[in-house]
Image 1: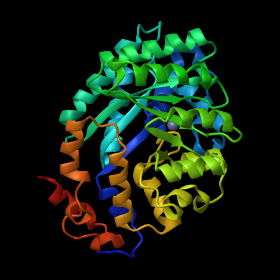
Image 2 (image 1 turned 180 degrees about the vertical axis):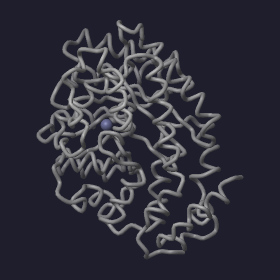
Image 3 (image 1 turned 30 degrees about the vertical axis):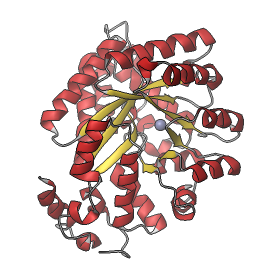
Length: 382
Ligand SMILES: [Zn+2]
């Protein structure tokens, strides 16, 4: 077994991978957004002043700009046909990167102009995922429905939003496995929604199958809010960029499942090098057992899951064994229902690296273009 060689990009790409934190709209390729913008601009005055420059990663250096970007994306994806197109494209992108278990998150959208309703939006996603079963074999996709905290301005809004979301989750229960709280961390009041989710998800039997993940500590100086989130004890925590030492210690000691998104976190934390990413604390220092490495927004950050894992491999000298153990721990933290968990586990994620590496055991890891990828493909077919 190749225990000392840093995992190569090629070998990482060839592994079956688990993606637990990916926003649908943030995962649309920038080329696709540019094409949509060029097509729509002549007939849509709202797009007249939208600049291509805003879609350039170089210009996106802080969270505020990220949320401006999302507002523009929403203007371009307003009808069923476009929703289906972009979803299929996003699914294909993850598939081609080697993702075999995907939890895609989205806030259900409605649009009066195009007749899109939140329910028809989810039906459209269902059609795209149905398409993927044939077109992209061996990839399992589930949905997480996101509460956008920025829209929560009153207790009544929050109750309406959460109840509507949970109704949709029940209606589409074959696909929806969990709920997420997302949105601009500088906006909205989480104290409006956390107790509601506690009473619905934990105390109401209709919702017991739904799991919860919360975007946590995306900004500095949010200790009170972070304490309330940790107190709620969601099944997973997203990002955990700015947790206090005491909260980080708690998360590490209790082994709570965390979703780390290296490039996105680097932007949010204004890090100059990936070596300063808190992955070092959780994985290297504390041997945290429940880390998933994720992309957040492959389109916005022009990245892939392979890229994110490679950044960490380079910064923290990870072997292919390390990368594989991260896929296995991510899978354990997934919200997959029992039957799918067993099936996919036996097929991919419960197996040792030597099995999924086609018997090369990572020997081809050094970067031979014909290496692990081809070997693995041969062995994964069963
Ligand atoms: Zn996110």
